[in-house]
Length: 153
Image (tube, rainbow, N blue to C red; front, top):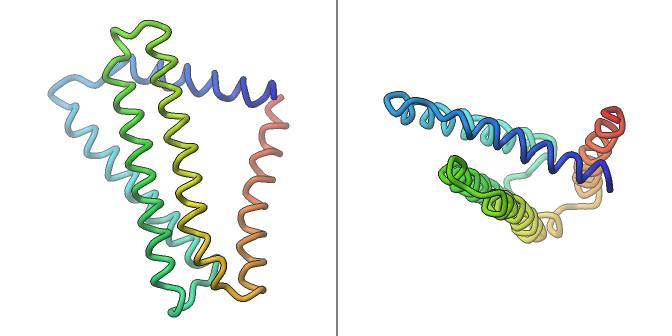
């Protein structure tokens, strides 16, 4: 539990530090466009990676499209929560900043729930060997994250 609280606070402060140094107005839109493009490229690469690792078949493709669209929408919603926080960071009180950070965390939690809902029909349509791939992929990822956090201590 201490590790989770430490990670949340570290993320909160690192986002806060980043947000306190906004780009100049002349370059702000260019920087945001580059950030959005970079995010979109990362999302596309991640979606492609999952598609390949899960061995999505032509029959499963319509269900996969829903999963991929949910991932894109989730990313947009989390980014919006971050942008909302960045707009108040220079004038926010500690409470306002914490509430804005809570909105980011809530957007993330909501996105995981939406992804689980979107992934459910695809998972149900998968044969057992493909379900095992999905199980291994998601469990392996969580295991690696937990292992990395333990090494940080």
